[in-house]
Amino acid sequence: MEQVSLKLEANRFRQRIRILYYARIFLLLTGFSMVIIPSLQKKFGLSGLIPYLIFFIMICYSTINYYIKSLLTLKIFTFITLIFDLSAVTFLIVSSGGLESPILSTQLVYLIFFTALFQKPFFILPPLLVIPIITRVDILLGETDLVNSIFTIFWFSSLSGIIVYFIVLLNNKTHQNALNIYKFQQELKENHLLEEKNKIARDLHDGVGGGLSSLILQTEYILSLTKDVVSEDILKEIKELKFYAEESMDEIRRSLSVIKNSFDFENSILIYIENFNYKNKIRVSKKIESGKIKIAVKEQISIFRVFQEIMTNALKHSQSDHIDVYLKIDISNVYLEVKDYGIGFDQNKEYVGHFGLKNLKERVELLNGTIYISFNKEEGSVFKILIPNVMKVDESSLELF
Image (cartoon, rainbow, N blue to C red):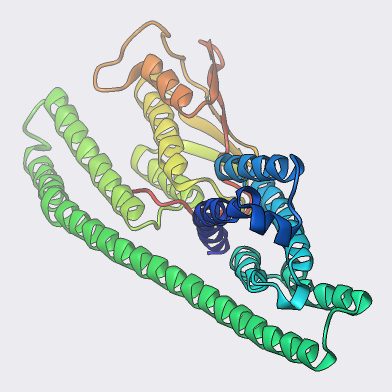
């Protein structure tokens, strides 16, 4: 929320810079009459080429101010140029009568500019100092009445206080309202996503999940009826059908956990290994080092798919009775090593019903990772995979959708 607040502040500052640009141009065009009308030239002490040069410089930096992209540079440049504007205005006020000047109220305009853009006490101090400075100059020149000076200072101080209070209060209210609107929009979005996720979850559970459950029950029933009747080849095919139905059912459960943002990579690995041991009678030794470091949600399921494919290939093609799994998760990388003790793989062969090694490599490459595979008919196969962990240090979760 802090980042959202800063972004809102930045957008509001840029919008007010645009307003400042048009206000400045209007003031400059109005003030140009002081330069071209002889009587006003005399009253404001503007003669020669210097006023024209200053006018041209102010037009230039006001225009430059409008097009600056960097926010920090924009703030610094705006503050410096406003100080220059204020200095020019103060000179004109002093030269045209001080506290009796017809443009004395311009100080209030610049107070509005400074307060609307910066709001901090240090930044709004320059326009507040204009009246005391002008008063001091008038006293030194002996051109002011004490009672009138005190009243003018009191009057402008009161107006300045009202302006600062009103603008700061209005800014805070506007900013808080913008944050409330953003929170409300986020809540609506989250509620909509939650409804969509629940709908997808129900459809998967009741539709595909129900169909797979029926298929598993029917294959178990067929196995019980035909165990002593049909050939070993037919029994093998029925068992294969049951195996894939159970794998698909597990996949449905994992997909539901992803949809509900409750997918836990490390726990899913442990459950998969436990089920793998139970269903296939293959001993799996595991070693997991994570230190409770998280992986980005959308990466978790992809890395799990890689692990799942390696284990399936080992089961179907290596003829191994023992598999070693080593998983290490740190802040920078996810390292996975799977070693079986079977007859190995043929790197150039595509096995029916499986992704094959080529697709396995493509999966890893999509995760910007690297994969090393070695084969030995006497020692089995080793898969070593290194994938960058894109989870930021302060990130607790990532939305899947």
